Length: 99
Image (cartoon, rainbow, N blue to C red; front, side, top):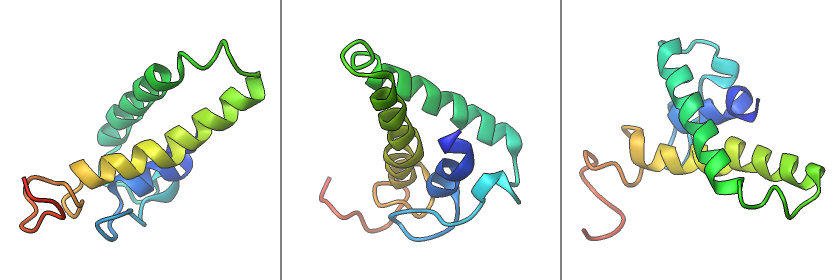
């Protein structure tokens, strides 16, 4: 739900190199297939990253941490790499670190 509310906008919305700021609730999204593909990718990443935590925390802690991961951590990291304006996009002319 977090990825649908604001995660996709942070990942693939137009904005700065740090974070996107368009397509909240996927409104105005040019391609819903692109959304669903990346939604599934986010679900897998969240499950893999937090799968080891689920038995060690309370259910509310798992829900909060998965909301934060799927809504903020994963979308911002994916915006840096996969968006055209992202910091670490290989097609970007000026990278913030030397490769």
